[in-house]
Length: 385
Image (cartoon, rainbow, N blue to C red):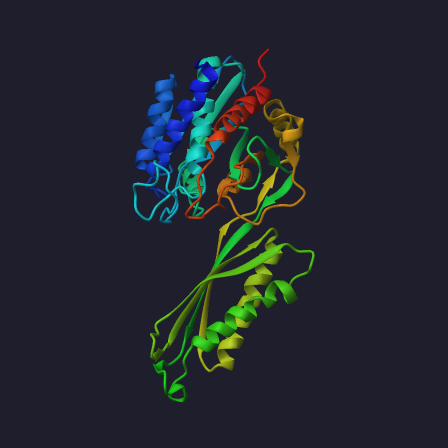
């Protein structure tokens, strides 16, 4: 016999699979945003604002006379990845897929909104913040620049992300540095290309590019304190060469992760030294473009304790983990923490493919856990008399 709990889980699963089948890239989440806004209004939420920061949605729910306000945030955007999995609800937008589980994050927050509208059980105000464009680090800034904090003020904020490898029904967070900053770099090498049979007639860049990629590995290994956490990854190497033509132009792209501004500055400085020095050694030129895209995410220690306490009511004491180490991926949730304290946490996605993998899929078994945690933290932080 169907119960209210099973019906709730079935509804969320249907919503999640609908969103998975219709993924949208950052600032293009028009269908997703309309889906969210329509659901919030259907639940009975009167205060729903669309178009915040482009395609963001903010719903506001008040209960009782409490003066405090907390925010719950979910990201909505997908990635430019072609889906290789074979679920019946696979992406219908070629080259775009929910490879990071933002479809699940959105639905967990929708489920929490439905329950809180129907059941109440708190005293104060909740902001449901559905954010665009997290994947390239622009969505939180866009919402903030559109007056999020003045138009929809709140005292603290919470967010969830799924974590492959962590069993479904588990919760994890930590105080202090939790996710790293992300810097992007592009190194362009210029020389003189030519015939593959006559390398001495030009100054081709392929050997210089390969040497640069290898030399960049010395930054973390030999230029940083071994106790500093940092990663430098080259993710692309492209040239204008072909099978029998040596390239005269090469582009090396990648990113760097760190937790301290001083470490980020050292990485940039050493990268410029290595790129320019390697280029000179091969008689070519080098240009380095280095940008900072994400800032470190630092959880508030007091709110981490609150999140852990709320999580124990949902996941049980054995299902709650205090992480010992930060994660070197990045999250623009960190931008909100420049204005208010908050806590970002992880819930298990089970034995799924990794995030950003073309066969990844959000585990629907995690939906009720995420929704229940959102409800629990609201009722704990906005206790009703």
